[in-house]
Every structure is written in structure tokens, then in C-alpha cells.
Image (cartoon, rainbow, N blue to C red; front, side, top):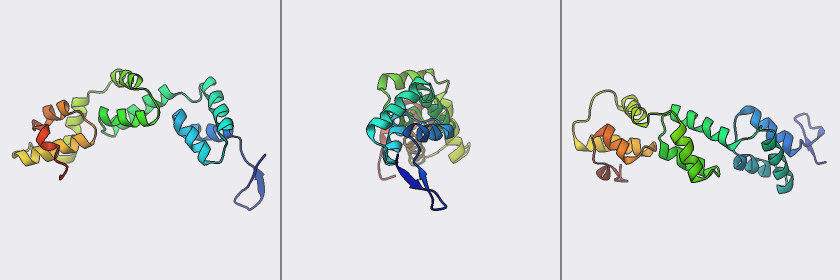
Length: 166
């Protein structure tokens, strides 16, 4: 068993990959891919990390679906749109079909969320000129809302708002 030094400088045995992953999961949900990366960064070998992840999955301590549901709730509460969530979940190794199913199952009114983000950022007054509407549309696009939703909320021509010089 490998040893590492604690804060007092004394040697102590290095925790197993399973124990390390369990401690990480106690703080928040993690995807399988994310836990694997953290274990590898912590110096655990692929075999030990894989075995630990398999065991955690069998015990239902680590579940990618539960992770994805928590991430969707959290990010939607932060005001992010479905395109942003889709990209983030894909980076965690979830399949496109599963992501679409989870986003469809999420009880989020994306139009209302986009309007809420717009009011939070710019107030309740409408934009008079096209440049201001484009700026507001660009804000929502960056937060991950689809063009149709942005068009409906801002009444801006989203093609004009896609100018990267904003």
C-alpha cells in the first residue's frame, strides 16, 4: 500500500480509490467520467479506479442519470439554457439520446427562464433599437438558449445577433 504524508508530516496509508471516490461523492454528485479523471489525477491506476467505479455504480452511490438530473436542476436554476446543458452533459460522457430524454423530462419552461434572465440582466423595459435587441439576443444565446426561444423573447433577428464582435 502506498503511503503519503499528512499535514503533520507523518506517513499514513493512502486511501483506496473506492474510499477517495466515496468521499468525493459525499460532497456532490459526480459523473462516472469525472470521478475517473479525479482518481487518475490522484495517482490511482486505471484498474483500481475502474474497479472502484464499478463497485460504486453497483451500490448505486454513483449514477450518471442522477448526476445529470441534479446538474440540469442546478444549471437551470442558474439561468442556463438547454443547449448549454446539452454540451455540458455530453462532456460528462452521456449519450445524445439520453441527454434529450432528460432535458425533455425536466420540468423547465425554457421560454419563461429566458425571459426571466433577460429581465434580471436588462430590467423590464423593452429594447427600442435593433442593436439593443441584438445585444440582448446575444446574451441569451451565450447562456445556451435556442434561437427560436431567443427570437420569441427578444423579438430580435437572431441571425443579426450572431455577430461575434459583440
